[in-house]
Structure formats: C-alpha cells, structure tokens
Length: 148
Image (cartoon, rainbow, N blue to C red; front, side, top):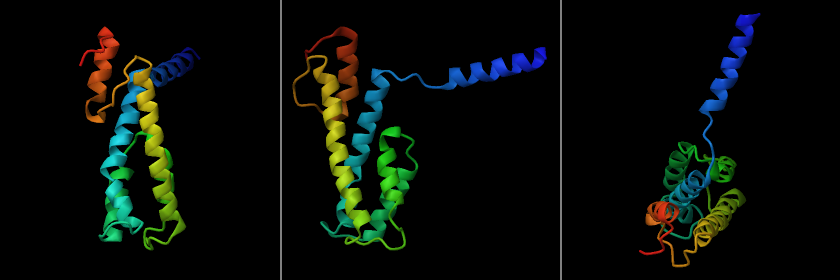
C-alpha cells in the first residue's frame, strides 16, 4: 500500500514539474514565432490560391511540411485548416484553400495586434520590428527603459 501511494505521488509530482509554466515572455515568444512562421510561408499560400505564379502542389507541400513539425499551440487553428485540405486535390478554387488563406491573413493580423498590445502595456508605442521584439521585450522587462 505504501509503495502505491509513493508511486502515485511520484507520478503526480513528475507530471506537475514537467509542464512548462506559462508566463508573459513564453506567451510572447509563441506569438512572435507563429507570426514569423506565417510571414515566412505566406508566399506559398498566395501560390496555392492562385494570386502568385508557381507550382500549387509544391507550395502546399512546403507549407505542410513546415507546419506539421511545429508544436506551437498558437498555430493549432492553422494546422487544423491545413488538414482539412485534400492534399491530392489542391486547387485555388477549393473553399478549403481559400479559407486557409483567409484564416492566415486574419490570424496573422491578430497576432500582430496581440504582440504590439504587450509592448503598449510597457509604454512602447513605436513601430515594432518583429525580428528584434524579444530582445526589446527583455530590455523593457528588465530595466523598464524605453531608450532604443
């Protein structure tokens, strides 16, 4: 009996200690990473919907291969929308392809607003460079400085 109690407590303790504690910086990191990912692969979406020239199937596969390896919870709706597309029949006229593009456009805008909102909470009102956003955040968080 004593062994069972110790085993159960050990499992509970192990489960609790392996979960990453969410804090503002981790949330910001995830949002910035998701925003960067969507920016990097937006061209592939434009090929998939026929707005830009290119191989639609190749663009789909590039986007799919990159997204499937992401474990960022911020990208979950994008993954779900991508998985609703029949990979054997990717075509610009498909509603599922158009909906993915709509989702990414709005989702990326929403991420941008959320990221900028965090910075506004620290009094940073300038145009934000996403590539430098995390180091700027650390500076604001650590010393409260708005100097560039």
